Length: 269
Image (cartoon, rainbow, N blue to C red; front, side):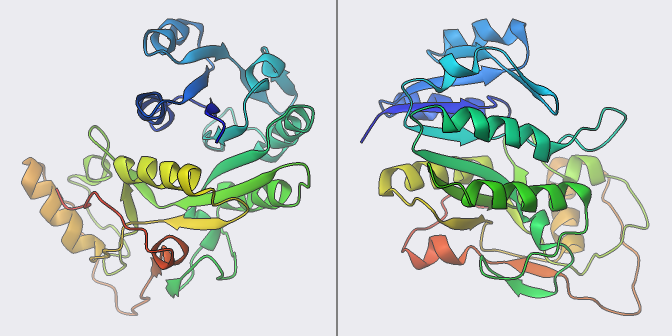
């Protein structure tokens, strides 16, 4: 197996992923949009590139970054909130054109469970995609662009809500009142399990597949976030009592678990 990997987006998840891959003997190239992070990457033995993707094109040495790597991991979220929104689909079209000219044969595209929209009940990788948010809609379009490419194989991972050492939704929800959908189940995954899934895909060559990445424990939001806030000594969030009960969705990581793989890091603190 070729040990040369590129990670487009060495951010909150990509950076510790790169560190883990290097630990496992991989040669890793990583990108950042910020020049002052180049040294940070280099200090971790990540070969650094400053690359900026926009809907107008790619700035930076994308040819150099993509050269001599067999596998590319794409972990850049759509920027569709706030004033500076841009088309994620157009960005990915430029990227795909660059990949076509390279020797990259395998791609991991990090997507989101937002592609299932407001589905009710259990959903798996084969469930219909019914996104309601703009980012969900653009992710579906990008998933299709990548999977329809003939020159390389793409595996898509649809991660649930990401939690980790310095990141948890309860910190945003703390003390808020009149929140809705308190009876809906949570669909979360720890960053360690995100990395574990990606490493498993690489080691087992699960190419051309789709995986949901959600820890298989789905307590109700109002129970889970109440308990997580208490454990941290934070003001607890409170939810509206809702007269008509929609049950929300439970995202099953069916493909991963059907391969006798497992998750390793619980979402309960």
